[in-house]
Image (cartoon, rainbow, N blue to C red; front, side):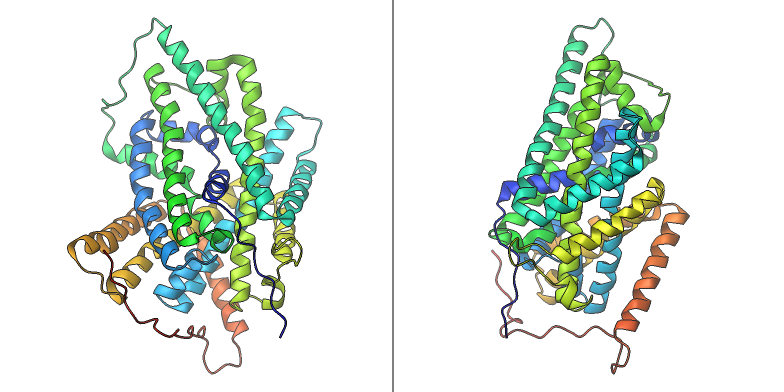
Length: 448
């Protein structure tokens, strides 16, 4: 039997971190600034702090499961191993919404911003060109993608640093009163509503778990990378939030969707706003690059498990060691950006991500607390209380999605159930086969 080509294990800790930050896109701070500012009544510091707390517990659960199962399937593998293979399949199917439509969002935003900056270039041409570029870079290998992502993420971080510096100098040289960051009369429910919007700025830390099989010492590297990503993100988000909240009070915007651009223009004038558009276009490119990397790896694992046709989806290019069929397929799917709205694409992403987050938290409880009986006082806190808090926060966020988003998500799940039945027609039952028990798998390791 010929040996199947495998993914190349070559990613270092910092490469993984930059790929995760590329998916997250630090410049998203400006993209959601307007709606986050209005929803939180201008209290962005408090809203970002609450959002970070909400997402921290789920990130911790991802780290636990990534250490236990260092494979590239992310939430799909975790739910499959800890809960049940069929539940894992449904979680993976829901996660496809997040990962499949993320490149579409990148293409849409790229078309919108490039066309806005250069009106003579049609949006559809921008979408096609970006899609082709993402495919080529991904086919060449994940190390090339990681190096490119690193450069573009560093440029985003540099822009945020310049923005904070300009705003800080302006604040020091102004005769206007400095507004308090910590005192607020805004009620907690309003701050929580702002946090629910802002939480989506942290989406992307989970994407690195799909790269476990291409990461050196994944059991140690992936959990560390997850925590580094959300810590870097909160610093990048809190810095400008503190300075803007100290500088301005009661801002209004001509266009809420373009509030970030208006803010940059107000602080740095035409020069900084021109740089802003350029950096934002780079950020969208790296987000699309990392998104395509992520979804192609999830499809690879689902193909390897025969959830999807194995011959095609588990194929790895013998030279570049990349899942070439999946990359080409995602490129074709991403052409939906030519006909789908940005609002609809975002609804798909939000439903898929939050559903997966809930089940990752539940997987920690099922595996560590229930199956492995890790029930000391410390272990109860880590393996029961923390994931319950994480699941509760994420469940609350899921409930805040509008009816259309929930309806679209449930229709997608229904389609997944029908597909599963079709794939398993003629078998004795319609359940995914349970994985074989490995020798010694029942042994429970003692944790210090």
